[in-house]
Length: 307
Image (cartoon, rainbow, N blue to C red; front, top):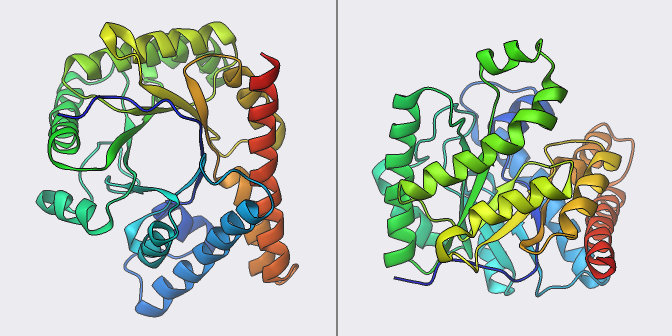
């Protein structure tokens, strides 16, 4: 079994969005035609080209990486691996409240087709939520964790979302911002503990933004408890605006154990929408996405150095 953990700097440009990308960017529902699939894949090539451009303009290759899906990004994954870039590929079905494998019992075959640096899962897990649901998720995630640590060269990246339960929101008069500030940080810590106790052992936790240094420190303490000293955490963007993402990056960068970020929609959404509306050229979209990604790298590195 491999040693659990990854604690080198890690700056991810994620564009593994599938269902949400298809519906919100293109307005398509249901089964896609080959032509529609090709159009989405071509749009994701714009993001990949922006990533490459960012590296050519100074973003550190040894710290940078992409997260893209097999459905629309298989060619990107193969090319990125050939170029020696850090790659991440999702294993979960898109858009489901309950985690399950995108490719069912063939999940391992799909992982090994691409040999990504990280196999990533997005999981909605509230420790005070439905017990049976959480148990089912833990059982599937344990299978993946065991496979990755014992039989694969890919590491395990876990994107943890803790959606509010109705009863939790009711206690806060349905104030979602108050939930994010007061309840979610503690629930995230408890979720990490429950998952670890269930044998789920990520190398990197992908974490929703936190408002305070103390909350970040609490998450790292949970991720690294019990001798898991090399496990890293990265902050995700959650589609927030630039200012909020800047704040989250600055807060997390000061905390040992937070090794980087994964900011996707905030980097690419607006330029892609404008490109598809013929308001800007493809080259301009590439340059704008590249500049946003490089900006997030700079913020994290500058704040980390100042800590």
